[in-house]
Length: 292
Image 1 (cartoon, rainbow, N blue to C red):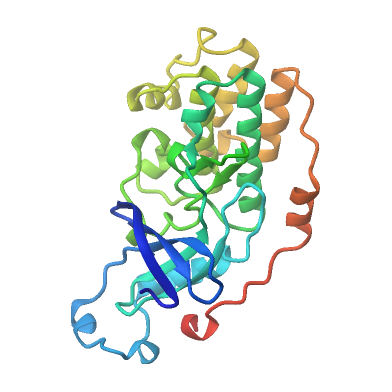
Image 2 (cartoon, rainbow, N blue to C red):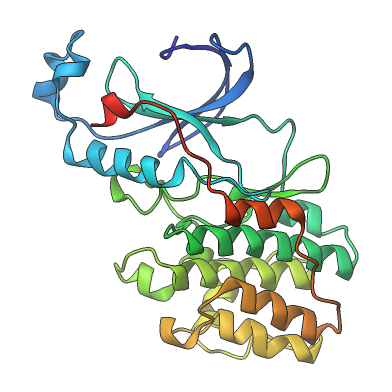
């Protein structure tokens, strides 16, 4: 048991935590529960017992709690939003999300699709990213494994907003790390757009690329060629993968417009669900006393 959740099975584990299938005893719904690994001060852990409500969180837990409070109200068709969050009996933070049955990674889906479908997948990813950025959040861990496609063909971003916390971040995949982040810089919108460029590079080429190949592209070597892409796409990809953050796109919606223009595709029509996500940000009712 973790709080009100009855844990049934493990979905996956990494250095950043473990994801479980769990049943919410309050609602009866099956959810995905992610228990985030945060280093705890050993002396305080030994005296923890049942004194959860009387203990102040450590700096790492406090920053995580604040970040969860920021991203928990976000609701968008291309995000897997947070349903609930809190701390378990061992003071490890957790949060729950809608469970996506048998999700596929973006690159696995894109490899078998036509250009128009691949463009749509990228546009959906960029819509989710634009929404996060508009609400003051960054993803911080954008890669194929955190861009999932459900049975309906909808792209869903997961794990957003948490990897910027050094204590909770897993080992990043080098290919998706912007040069300034690799040098010790913080996660940012510009770094998210660099990672989006890496994904676009592979989705549009219909083939995976090695870390070395992507890094060489980001450092300015002439790897982006008409062998993989229509020549009209090259300026868009070069702008996404510019080594200097100030030389990259500043807004994911502009990337959408430029991708469509380069491929002579009609700009996407804004759906009612996307429009509503901007007009009404959900009010989150959760564990304010615990987070105080």
